[in-house]
Length: 319
Length: 174
Image 1 (cartoon, one colour):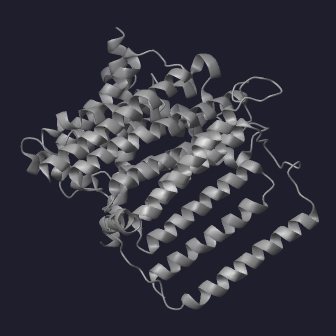
Image 2 (cartoon, rainbow over the protein chains, first blue to last red):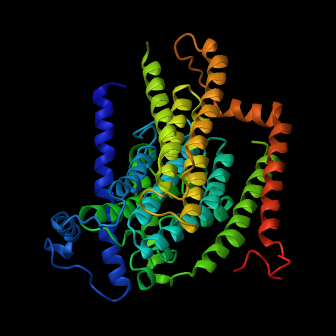
């Protein structure tokens, strides 16, 4: 691999990382608005307010970058980067077309899970360094939630890896058959639920519950650093949607996969992103005890059951 | 001197420096954050040596779960911003700790340095090979370790839920 190719791949991932979350954000504005009988942004940019998020970005850049006097300044300033960069790195390992991914790794499924797990440290740093009790409460809620939901997520992914006999995302898609939709369905439900919880999106938004703790760990942030946290949430939706499409929906499989495989992956991921947005509109916020109960008493047993089912089918068919 | 040598040396320096900072800093939470840097650098060392799966598990388990748990516990109890003096030990105590640490390090170096002669010996270990070793040759020690961890977990739970004779209530609930 030449230096030019490496640069090109990095630029491509960065471009996707900067454009796709904006697309998801704009979709959220419009889909949510129409589900609630509103129009959503209509003015910015002319056609159905397409430039609303660009305008928001310009607004964030103009705002003053404040650091609270009592804060631990270095940790406070560094936290948004820790929250944002893992998703950028995770995006680089996701295959979108046969042989097309920014970084080729033998165990990319484990890699993506490991990297996404690092992002929580950014939230913890933000919440602690803000010197604000709401921020600290939010960070602790986030940590408790992410620790609980990481386990069912890893179990659901390992079930698919077991089915495919591969730890590589591209290998999983290559092995995928349409009947996996039914075979891996419980795992898919577990993964989607755990993904929404990892992203701290409604109905799992206890850590940023606005009516209780202002905006959780991000309460004290302003301007660009706040925008980075928001961007990391939407980048997270993009990464999780692509992961779901690759793991459970067969990625590039579909008619004319040879030429249009990348389009299938993107379309499936986009459909999942809309489902994640839909969940925000459709469900009320879960309480902390309900959150933990759901993770440990429903999702973990379900994921273990799925693992058992996968193992049993493989043992019987002998593949 | 290959690129692997340079990468390994750089990661080693980062790991050692961050580890020293983790034990010398007066800021409790900074200490845990320096531990993140150390563990990340060690994962990088594994990666340079070709043990990709071990590196990723190091990241997933240690950085993603254990340090997060440490940070969580720190925040639950008391984690002031700025240096905390109540945990500062006496000069003699620190000197003794440094002596013990230096002694252990010297012992390890005396054993390991003669082995570390040539350039980085990179061996690609496939995940399948690792799994066969772990669940074939080493399956009994592996299972024994998991039973030990499970026992510790159950015991910790029992201790936290034990009924205290003086209050007559369960210790786990406030």
